[in-house]
Image 1 (spheres, protein in one colour):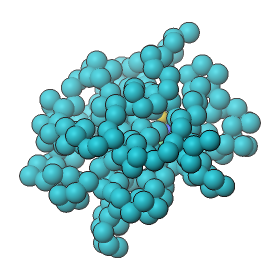
Image 2 (cartoon, rainbow, N blue to C red):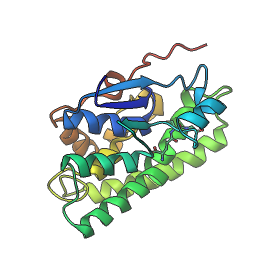
Image 3 (cartoon, helix red, strand yellow):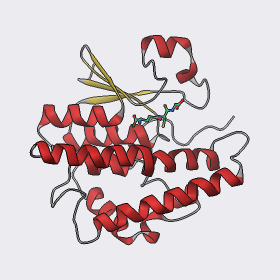
Image 4 (cartoon, rainbow, N blue to C red):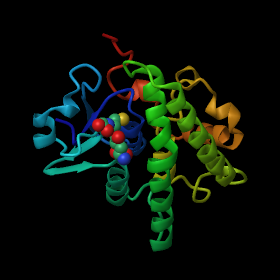
Length: 215
Ligand SMILES: N[C@@H](CCC(=O)N[C@@H](CS)C(=O)NCC(=O)O)C(=O)O
């Protein structure tokens, strides 16, 4: 058995943060596929009793330790590997600030927007999509400004804040109906810098379940 098991599925940008981190570290890990769309295991009492009471993916298992919330998983992996780790207390707090902003406002809106456009049955209400798109544009502009004239979110070196922010940003433009890298050039350039890191892989290569068999 591998050292780490990660409950994940290819369409999950939330899980991608953890999968990407494990791969960038060169960790010995294996994906455990979550049948999110078909059996919807995350909704079952068994999943909530035995795997994650919050009913969410990703979940990282490391020996006897089980961790959920990608921000917690990234923090744990950075502390244990010493890589992508903010350098001091101030940097740690700054990284947490961006991770929370990302979880709530950036990928926190992109995830549901893409879900409603591509996977929801029936598809999302246009008014809801328009609301989300407005929030997404505002928040991507904030990230774009932050990355203008900076290599990475915190400094010249990538940290867990950068790994977190990648969340949904590499999924194909057709899935969003707009091209994030083109519309936000500083984000586009930063995505290329992240892509150049050894161990980088696209979410559809890194996690199981793509292409999705639609039922
Ligand atoms: N903040 C969480 C978000 C996790 C999350 O919402 N994951 C989705 C899959 S992409 C999920 O499991 N959703 C189930 C639900 O909300 O019921 C994290 O970063 O781990």
